[in-house]
Amino acid sequence: MNRRDALKLAGLALVLPASGAAWANSGTYQVLNPAHKGDDPSKIEVIEFFHYGCPHCRDFDPLVSAWKKLLPADVVFRPVPAVWNNPQLAGLARLYYAAEISGERDKLQSAIFAAVQDEKRPLFNEEQVREWVTGKVADPAKFIETYKSFGVGSLVQRADQLARAMKIQGVPSVVVDGKYLTSASMSGSHENTLKVAEELIERARKERAVK
View (tube, helix red, strand yellow):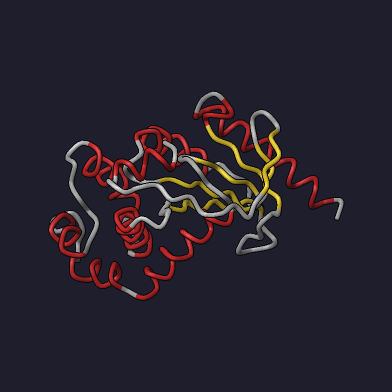
């Protein structure tokens, strides 16, 4: 799902920011210039940009969830919810980070996709999330405390900044080592996206070895 469609679903007009990034197209992937450093310079970081309203992200999620478990020790995987300066997507991103930090992500991930896409539930604010999560986690009050926390808010802001810096225009998208981006629209399928990501991980590893 591209950014324009996502924001239309949210009922908002699309306003594209000025681009600060240039892309070189290499067929199944693109090269981001400038590249962006990951949190841990010793690791090859793989980022998946997604959001819960995207049917393609829902299809991709079980594939990437299985794939990430097989990644070698020098690779770290990080999901990042797309926000695009959209209050509703920011609410869904806050829900994601609350689930991740509270240790409930694996339990809730499929249920959130289903709630947003099948049940059309607006899980965009504290009241809506509180009602939905009750009965789904062991301690709903603690979950909501995490949801409201400054730390979660900071993560949402950072996610938005990262997607803007990398000029992410569609989801699901995968960025390898802060410089290579691929997606099903480039690779041909979700399965091919993961194959291309593996090739890009190997390329990044070789590039690091010669520095």
